[in-house]
Length: 242
Image 1: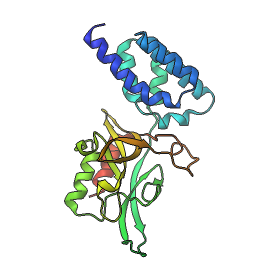
Image 2 (image 1 turned 135 degrees about the vertical axis):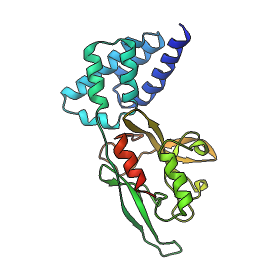
Image 3 (image 1 turned 30 degrees about the vertical axis):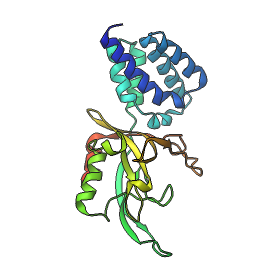
Image 4 (image 1 turned 60 degrees about the horizontal axis):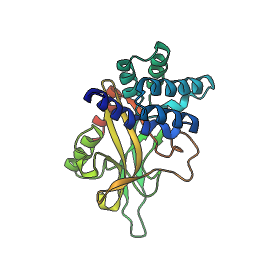
């Protein structure tokens, strides 16, 4: 296998690692076997057939939480998959979430500081205080610090968390050593994707997937929620943060 093929297989392995967590066992096993055998085109076709079945069952909303579909669609085109497979991936990759902002409030008392913050809202669901006593770092920290966090959401400056970006931090000090809700930010031509929300500390390069105990609504009930945003609307929302 030439270097280019090796690179393609490595990328497919990464993408499938994200996607297969939501697939049934038969799909996982078949795709993994084909990928191990170097049958890259066939592995993509199998995954697309499952996505098509999901669509026919009326569950296409699931696509909104599958990360990597944009990159997989681009890669599939280069691999020369069937037209039906390519169309299925194109439609799945077209699903979008919406990032907005709104005012948030964390009450004080009992030794805790009161905080008025700017909340990050995904498809109408605010992140602040949703998963415990953590809030976005916007609207209450020094402006220069807020810009640093915003740069992370824009796909820059995430080295401190091994390529991940803080979404919510400790409302007392914003010290990442207290832990934080973090995410991988992936930029594409016309979309931005959040991959694998989870809890992470800078003292540990691994992260714990977010599994909200009370969440029954997708995609929050997924083991590692992921989202896809229109790039222009996403960056417009970021500009409103600081």
